[in-house]
Amino acid sequence: MRSRSSHRPMSQINVVPYIDVMLVLLVIFMVTAPMMNPGQIDLPSIGKALTPPVAPLEVIIKKDSSLALRDHANGDAEHEVSSEEMILSIKQKQAANAEQAVVISADKSVRYEEVIKVMDALQRQQVKKVGLLTQSK
Image 1: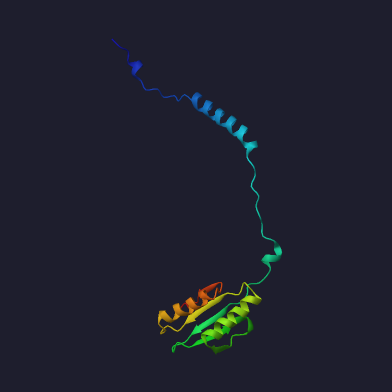
Image 2: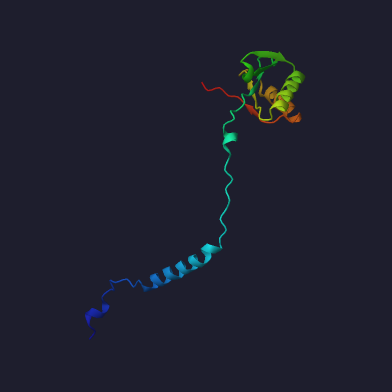
């Protein structure tokens, strides 16, 4: 007859294989760590961070689809312009300062097609940094 003690589950964990695996990984990391080349990080300079952002030029599309231009850097006065005058003014401002952004704002009753026409005209003239201005209510 068999003894009952031979069927008891083993309650101990053999940790020797885990230690062997850990030591092999440690040796691998110790050998490969000196071979790795450290990366170089280019940090921004302080002078670039201190330049304030330039106020954007705002192209306003009114209810009657007429255009107005507002330069926030030179006050908030807006003046009526034609499409050609708008592009010429924006190109002159961006020639003086390449970081000059242009935002388009339109009356809520203006058809979206008019906004697309203005964006298309600006993109055809290689005007950089064009965005849409939204108002939160």
